[in-house]
Image (tube, rainbow, N blue to C red):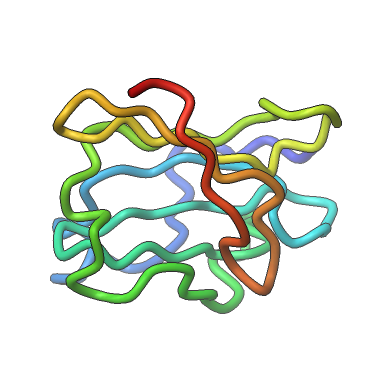
Length: 117
């Protein structure tokens, strides 16, 4: 994996990115570089595939604006299932519930499993 040099900007400063509530990285699209997962303040959640020093390369929307993900307290990506691919997402909701969304890919979310009530 290529390391980013100090001072590398993926996008030019704009008014969109201050609306990012949380960011995480994972391997959702099968490229050789990491993908960026962004949950926005309005609940929209997007994947930016193949992030590298050249910047962002497209956008995959996995949750629409005004989705229930406005109530997500913490979102993180990793390998939480039976394989080692970092394409699973854990969400801790504001009510304390924790859900697992395994095997996220270009098609988005597939299933949700409540792991803490």
